[in-house]
Length: 420
Image: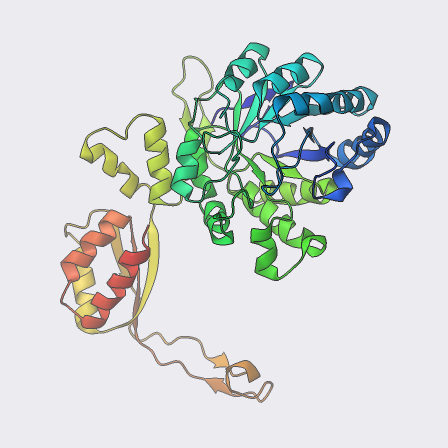
């Protein structure tokens, strides 16, 4: 994973999660607490409620991203830039300043006048944007978007979102944003939830990730909350996003989001890395939990067009463990035969003790008993076992045991539908 230096602020796996606080200098922006048109008031807000509460980055928006509003031209954005510059010059706190824009002219002017970073919400739809960022040697957050300056983030399918991040290339200091939220009428809450569910796949580019999920509708509808009540769901998702590999969290609620991000970082799985010297063989354990995630990393290193045998590495990158219960003797025998000296290399079956009973469970009001009456339900013994293996190996087991038991065949049908 490449780390990015944003004006001295390290972003990536080697650094703690970074918090990007939001300031809008556009009167049409929808979230009132972050909207200011007076530089003095804006600077006080930045010092007290953004930097003062733990923001590492201040992201300044010149216009609303509301899809129902007209898009400002580069000239109109430049007209608003003075307010942003005056605010920057009036703050006393220390932070990296990011300009949110889709135009290279605005980015060039903002960086020339003191900004440190660019947040491109159209993902290099302006083909001159990467050139400007390279020439100024600044970090740039690139949001997935169609090649259209008026349609930021208007992509529904996760695979299309992933591909869109390649548009017009990447700079050495690019941070990737998969674009959550209602950027188009066609983009549904389910689309956003699937994108979040598959967030680790975006690590396949080997670049730091930024997520903007603060009080987003795809989270609010899970709990049935409106925007004012949506902070808890945002914080829950923030911890999950960091645990899944996000490096920058963009938010209006800085202090609370910072705490949630630190919790996510604390309980993320430690992955082995070594060999940073020039003469060392470097090792990085990748954050891979699904076959698709492994395929993204194969794409990154150029293995996508390799031989079929190399491509099948993705199928061996993850291991699944299933407890099978209700097995009859023919099913147990077939599973043993298929995994002991059989063709299913990489799979194992461990049967449980046939006479071991499951522990008795106390009946309760929720399962039909009377809470506190002391009665127990005895669960009859059955044949159980753990099946462990890579997706490819489990498929081999399925082929080997086919026909041994109808219930076992049905069980493998379900596994096959969900193994990836």
